[in-house]
Length: 419
Image (cartoon, helix red, strand yellow):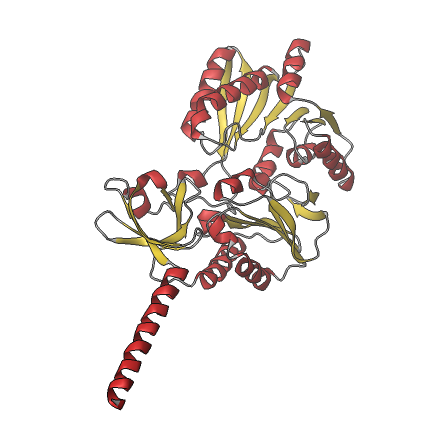
């Protein structure tokens, strides 16, 4: 009886243990396994980091949004791992191609690798330290402004590892402070609220940086994106050679192009719809002892139309508008907008002058943008030569496997009268 009692007790104990194990596994979830539809896996295999929900054939397991999912081809071949989020059209953001799964360790390693690349490229005072998918860190952006960092965390998976991100940035850069600028509408697609604030140390509103030998004040609290557009810094330097006589800088923001042009031009008109931005232009001009920049507050389309009616022309016109589309569905509307602004800009260029025109809409391809420019040039009844084509600065690297990471188009056109 005693032996039977013991055996019975052991059986009961084992049943209790098994029950608890089952409950534990259920509570923590079983890691997602994602199988891509046949014929839809080639881009991901070749290195594209995104798996869209409509490309998925089967999902096994059950876990939380933002957790690590394993991605396979339709026939079960391993591709990689990434953050999963059913709230987003991008179901999985792949950033691991080997068998590792320690996300915090990988984040620290990738941040170090990203910064080593920038140092190797010669960057020091201000640069994009982390460029999201291009640096294998999904939807994480970190910009260095002197002794401070400004970051955006735009995916749920990365947000759940925010502490690891901050710790890795502190270890790598030893900054005086880190400020978060995750006040971006795209976070809503990830089920995240917009938010800003100090993540580490102390961060002043205004930070002085040195770009192309110029002093610039960056408003990290209110400036565009993380505070300033670093992707155009090499292009701003390059435009100095075209900035002679009178220059019109449309969509001037905080004056990056305006100040660079002011070094070689006789006069610069800095035009923007934001009085806050123009106040920053004036601050930066004063900081550099420049008195040949005039600020004008107004809509660029309307201002250019007024200049055309007045017959006013400039030796160089710069068009650096915000993205005209955030969706592939509205590309045609965006191209019409680009055609309109470039037609107006072309009319405002003196004979023998230059039109510097840009697009940061990644949905608008370089081919489509160039085709639009050709059409505008043809209708302008002027002779238009392309003298320079550039893209984003090297601290914003692009993946050859992901067109989305190569987004900035920068064209310099020489304009003369006659066909």
